[in-house]
Image 1 (cartoon, rainbow, N blue to C red):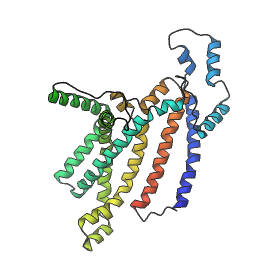
Image 2: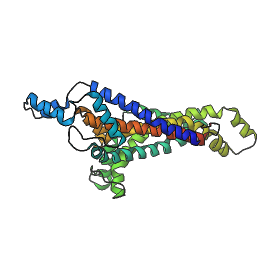
Image 3: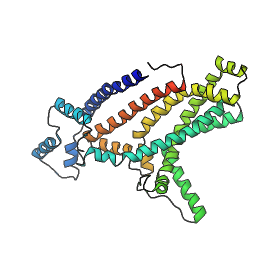
Image 4: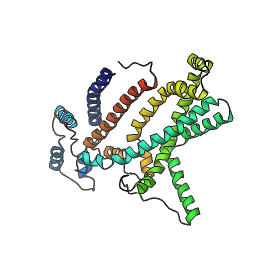
Length: 323
């Protein structure tokens, strides 16, 4: 187990290096020039000398291999450089927005787990009944419903309910407050987008749970456990569910990594200033430095999530030996 853990941790470094090289190359292949965007943003004209000075200021006039070495050295020191567009440190730009995306992603994941695993298990145990039909309809609706439409409808629902109760429509303020400073205000801001994302997230995990449970319930060891006279609750929880959760845990880990940088539409609908929105702005402004740092952040979270999922496998299924 320890050898496997060390090997997985050591594998993170070449993976990050390959991802960094790929991101660096792809960013340079994108047409456009950040200096043209900066100097011409106000519609004013500029000279070739001003353009060259801008290139020298942000360092893109140097050879590409030297820029790549500086990029890798900065990643090793957790120094992501300075934003080419705003002029602020990249770590500061990310630090001000990362807590929003992280909190929404964590809350959406917890909501999805609380919905998907119980309903998926019940649907498999009540196969081809009205309960199974209702759960499948609920999950298909979550997959088919666009996230932006669901977000808009949830906002309108809150406005209608508050107007019916108090006579005045109400929505929480859009300025983000950390959870440890004002928990009530923080949850009023984050809960609605988390529920919106978590429902769609749960729909995929719910169908995966149902399919895995149906497959496991047909295994010989389940019939043997029932033939021994074990309680049905023990058979389901200890023998069936733990083995059925293997593919579900994989889906949950992949979706969590996606949620960190993939909440662009949700953040736009709820006016959240998160990582996804920042990534879109960095691409629009052709800010290489900021975009590279954001992509590497998402890649790192994805790698760590996959590593934790692999370690969780050994606890769920003792037949897996991590060696």
